[in-house]
Amino acid sequence: MALLNVLCYPDPRLHKIAKPVAQVDARIKKIVADMADTMYEAPGVGLAATQVDIHERILVIDLSDEQNELMVFINPEITWASAEKKSWREGCLSVPEFYDEVERPAEIRIKALDIEGKEFELEADGLLAVCLQHELDHLQGKVFVEYLSLLKRTRISQKLKKRSKELEGER
Ligand code: NI
Image (cartoon, rainbow, N blue to C red; front, side):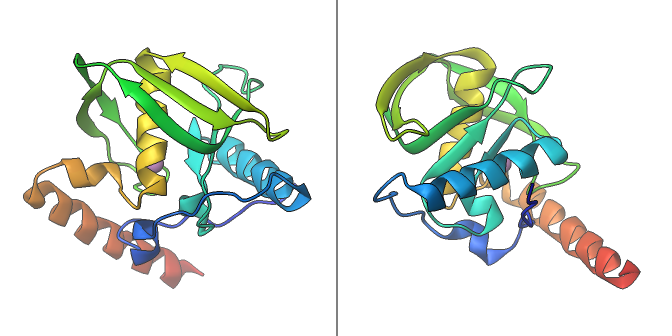
């Protein structure tokens, strides 16, 4: 088991754009396993490779209560999104202790490769649709706070900078 360091907003590396995975090989499988360990340890329901400073299109999600239903999405692409939108209160491992409402399409269709490199398609609504769109944004270098007002974003950014300074001081 290997835990990866999760970048904290406003770290500029969170704004890098991830590249597609060329081949799902042993290296990618190791990254997926480490990302899953990191997500479960946090604990969180989703993690994008960008958040652990790996800039390749990889996501892991697990919405189960038991945390035993890992979903892996390699090179995910949204192929359809509903016109209907829905607002959810979102949080993020890279933005600790902040939650706010974000409006997104209520339903999406996505295609991706699984851990064996096999393509699959999935229709998602509810929390899975929210989670997938949130994580896909990370791969594009976007953090959910960027949907909020500049005032809120500035406040979050200042508080988190202060928080990471305090954490450094404790080390
Ligand atoms: Ni996030």
